[in-house]
Image (tube, rainbow, N blue to C red; front, side, top):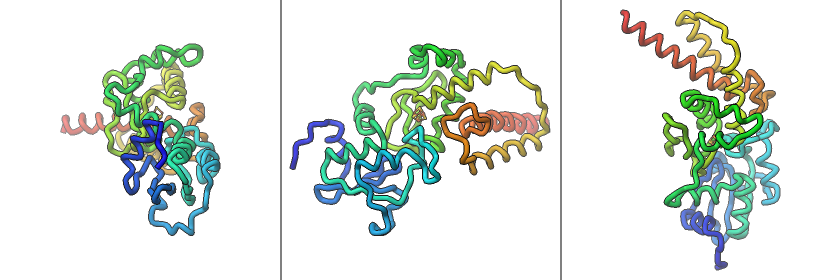
Length: 265
Ligand code: SF4
C-alpha cells in the first residue's frame, strides 16, 4: 500500500472504515478504491447513476440541479444522480477538494489542540474598504446575521468561530466540515445588514394576527425560494438570508407579544 504523506488525508482514511458521509457526499471504500455519490442516492442502483470523472466534479459542484450558481460549496444543494469511482487515496483527496474545497485540511486542523479559528471581531477588524462597515454591527446584530446566514438551511459547515453572546454550532444538523472563519457570503451579508440598519425606519404597528400572517408568509417564501434570486445577491429583497433574518426578528416580536398577552390575561 502506498505511503500517504498528507496527515489530513491519513487521518481521514483512518476514520473511513466502510463508509462515511462528508456533508452531502457518501464515500465508500471499495478495497483500495473508493466510490463517491450523493448521500441521497445511497440506496439507488449504481447502474442508474451517471458516471462522473474526478475532473468533472468541480463543474458538478458549481451549480444546483436548477442550474443556479452555488457560491457556497457547503450549501445543502449539491446535485444528486452521479457517482465517481476513485482509484487511490490521493485521488480521493482531489475529488473531495473539488466538491468541498479545503474540507479535509480544515477537518484535520479543527482536531488540533489549538484550532486556527478567527472569530467575527478579529476577522472584521482586518477588513478595509467597503467591508470595514461590518465592524459597526453590535454583538447582538452580528449574532442575528450569523444565525440567519449560517444555519443548516443554508450551510452544512459547523461554525467554530463566533461573536460575544453567541455559542459556536453544535454538531446537530451540521457536517464534519468545520468553518474556521467567516466566509465571503457571511461578510457580504453583514455589510448589507449594516447598510439596512442605517436606513431610516418606518413605524408599522401590527395586530398579533397580522404579525402571524406576515411570519407565515415569510416561512412560505423560505420554503419555496425564488429560483431567480442568486444566493449571494444580498441586494435582492427576496434573498433567502435576508428573509431568514427578518423572519427571526418577527418571530421574536411575536413571542414577546404572546408573553405580554398571557401576562395580562
Ligand atoms: S461563515 Fe457561515 S455560511 Fe459561511 S461557510 Fe462558515 S458556516 Fe457557512
